[in-house]
Length: 208
Ligand code: GDP
Ligand code: ADP
Ligand code: 5GP
Image (tube, rainbow, N blue to C red; front, side):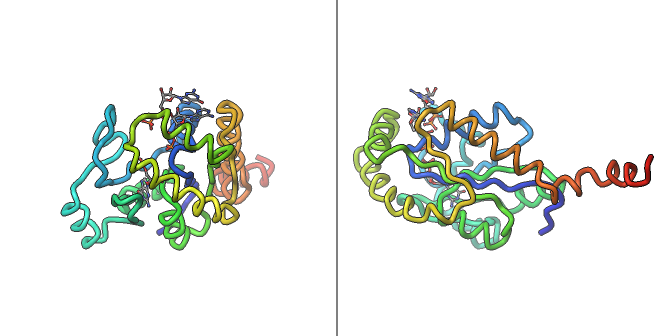
């Protein structure tokens, strides 16, 4: 797969760290970044809309998609299956679109095998205690689900050094600005700019 000028941002966080809230705030500030809508076998939470938050599918559909090779990556996370659509990613990269994947650490490892230039961003909570408070405060998950998600958090944080950037979501506004800064800085990298601005740079080089 070619990657003309688009960046792939991969945002990973322990559940409850604020990934969904921060990504929503980033997309509001940077509307040209497009969010990949994952496929999931998890039941929708109250307020979640099919096709907007996830493409909600049952296990049989998910398995047939795996067999057809429809996923760039897929993983079992907290007992449900999640996957990223390969055709969608390909179509966006082909036109140079910046895209953002909100996926788990296993998915991030798989994507980076295909796209080594993908930019890994880890959102860390300020503490495990605060993570637990947020998961309970969100009130979207059962006690068993919350316990399972907290147990995974420590293992996820152990892999933090594998990411290009770490954003601590303590003060939300500060974390939001950190995330926006990462996106903007990566768009300005010379390798990207040279491809995007090729015509303009060639004209300036000719004194035109
Ligand atoms: P979810 O993905 O469905 O859990 O939705 P979000 O996590 O994006 O948002 C859940 C609620 O938390 C919304 O009512 C947000 O406005 C609110 N919220 C988002 N960020 C913050 C924050 O930094 N502090 C507080 N106190 N509330 C927030
Ligand atoms: P994730 O997508 O990582 O599971 P969410 O975005 O759903 O996390 O956030 C989990 C909960 O924590 C939500 O109720 C959200 O409103 C809250 N939250 C997010 N960021 C902060 C923050 N900086 N301070 C306090 N609460 C936060
Ligand atoms: P939630 O159920 O809270 O929405 O998400 C649970 C976990 O699954 C999060 O860590 C989230 O990043 C991850 N996830 C969401 N979509 C995908 C996906 O397409 N692929 C992978 N590998 N993980 C995903």
